[in-house]
Length: 306
Image (cartoon, rainbow, N blue to C red; front, side, top):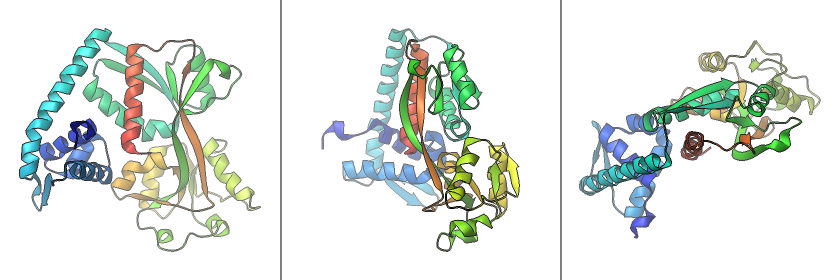
């Protein structure tokens, strides 16, 4: 096997596990779910054709192969860090700020992981975040208040001035608490879903509109929610503690899924998919700090495997 077959990301994951002594703490450190971290280590062991990690009741420990590999892995991490530091110095990166506009799903589902990585790897960047709806973010982008926007495609008169780079597909679906009775049976019909207790976003928010349209296309009256809110944190907590259902982007509950609080009902008729974009003005050159922030966003999304 050639050395070039190894991935720096997998080496970083291996070091996090042996240094933290557990998959759970290591997953938090590298901003991944435990299943994604386990998959990364399995792929690394398959490439090396040796077992690197032993799981014990006391935690995880490196095998003999793992101990031998660990010292080289640390040297690789140090060399890469020094190389990046030199390149950043050559680029003339200085302390500065980046202004980003985001929609609600990105604000709660992606941005916390991005900010954790920025704080760790690039503390010189101050990030100014504006959360809002598409029309507000579009105005901020056009007038120069925002360097870029991460969210649904911006649709306005001067759209020709904007570059839209697809980042991922945002799938919205039914969300319930883990262990909800609805998860134990075959997916109910749309007519049966009307009779469930729901907590939903308020009209005319796009997510609520799309949810209502799913039922109206089948000539059904949309469910009358037991609660309506614009607070995503309240909505997630309410779902976890009750038998109410909701309709949310999958990206917003990845952490809750990993922690065993919430689950997604993969219903064949009740879902909505939309593309999420990285948008910026064509005639405005992004600063080195902005490009670095954008690269961090892409790396986080790749690690989350959304």
